[in-house]
Amino acid sequence: MPKAKKTDSTTVANEVAVATPAKKTTRKPSAKVELFIEHNGIQASTDVIAKKIKAEYAEKEGAAVIKTLKIYVKPEENTAYYVVNGEEECKLEGIF
Image 1 (cartoon, rainbow, N blue to C red):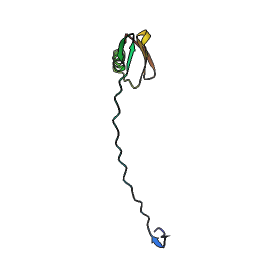
Image 2 (cartoon, rainbow, N blue to C red):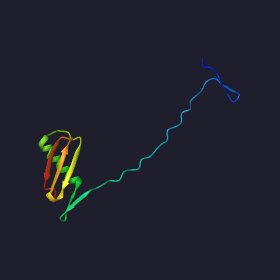
Image 3 (cartoon, rainbow, N blue to C red):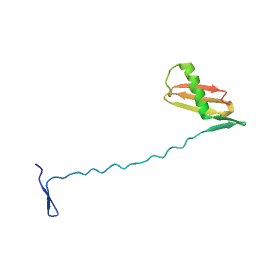
Image 4 (cartoon, rainbow, N blue to C red):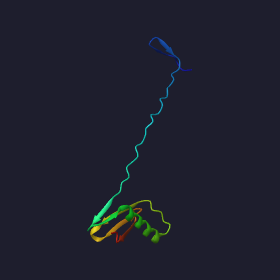
């Protein structure tokens, strides 16, 4: 049995922890971001470039899973270079 503690002339036999309710937070919806690249008056959406890259990669590798995709665009070459899963380096020509 725990020893009684003396607090302000009052004997407390057991200390009870009171749980405080968790504070509810609401997340604000994040804004949809669209990025376009323009070169010589022609515009290309990065979403479209990413879809083309994924389709090309699927043709080459079949059902391989893309965990990470890094894209480097060189408008002056009309080319997007990309790295899949930190290993495979390829390029997609004719992005514009």
